[in-house]
Length: 305
Image 1 (cartoon, rainbow, N blue to C red):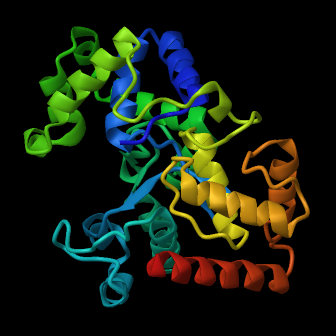
Image 2 (cartoon, rainbow, N blue to C red):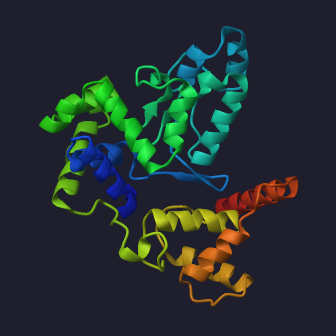
């Protein structure tokens, strides 16, 4: 499991305190639901983690478009029949394809953000439309946390969190199959770690791992994952695992060499600025084609590695 950055944990804690919920409990729910990841880079933009549910789309799509959705492999009456791509970029592409058939149904057929809240709950959660729920999830980490809290409050789960009734909470948050996936056990373990201030299974980001500061080999966390995604988009393919290891250092050194920077394998202000400038801009077809070509090259390189 990955580890939330200090910044993400601070946001969760602030929102929890503002709403009278024990911070360790809300951190535990967010960690178990998201695997410790707060976002993914998709097309150069930070996006919340999503999962597309084809059986929801099958039920919600207009009857006159259902056959089209099924033919495209986006809808099925059977839960689990429509498989999600492993990566978030592929899942966002799946959402975009579904949205071209029926946008409102597509947005409702996705579980959004660190709380993995289904878009289909938009009305129950007090949003004016599925689009409004999606905007909240895409507005940033705080928006994702607020969305998760709306679901908890709307379904009267707050008392279960206060009582630390992990089985009762998991049953109502995740459904009757919670025990199979050991959600209650995982929630209890995550709560104990956050309550006692102990690190999760992957060490939390060091001070060097915070955004805007130096990153070097040995660091890990969201800031490292950001850098890895940006290096991949800039033509230096890496697995975005959030761990600054030898391959990440080699890719950074190669980037530094190409752009005339000090080749020290340390991600500081100069490398950060150069990498940001090196990312393709989408204001023209040339920029878009460059970005696609780099992604194809990066994917080919990762498959060979």
